[in-house]
Image 1: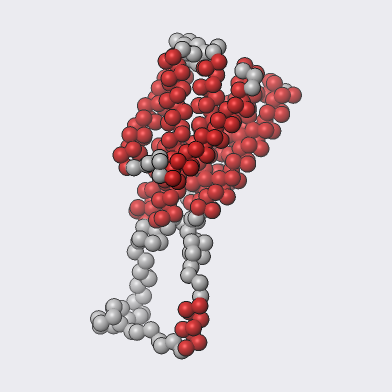
Image 2: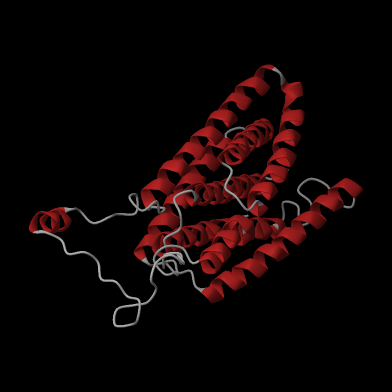
Length: 292
């Protein structure tokens, strides 16, 4: 869940601590063999004068952009997000076809994708360096999980998957346009409230899973397909939707603060986490609306 995603939490923390280009300490390292000091102070040596040709070349040179300085850009994040989305979609499609001809593989692929994605996601979130292979592996595992889960849901509720896909993409587009237009705000206060809400929802989900395993509940767990269950699913969709806005805001902060280009993969990974979460929550909501 990207709103309280360790990926974005770690990026924000490192951007503050390491003070990357644009707001940090950019002084050159000290060299004991060279005179030290600033202009007007002892030891200062002025730069050698430039001739007219050098000055003309300097003035005509275009200003360095984010790509020239190795910083993350919105285009970078968009390209990486589309790459990961294609991996998720491709793997989900392959899983869908495979489980159609071999239904016995559905549950093994579902569990492998779910638990494998959870483990790899935690490693990515807490790993100090950016690992592109791990991020790609996560997208593949999530695609396998989504494909297997979608196959099961489609078997129970014919036509539900296409409706959920359209609703997910429409919600993503709406959240992005709303955020860019300024209708959807992300502030420090809203981040704190959202983080607490996500933690509460996560704890409830864990208790719900435990209840299903222990036989305390059945079907969709607490609330079932009644008004309470539908309300819980609406809350889940709302949290997953707002997590996208938090992701967009984190990307904007990263670009503004001059995050290194390598973080574009982490930003894209965080968006994919939220997108998959949103799709699963929409599927659950549609299933509850259609009943047992």
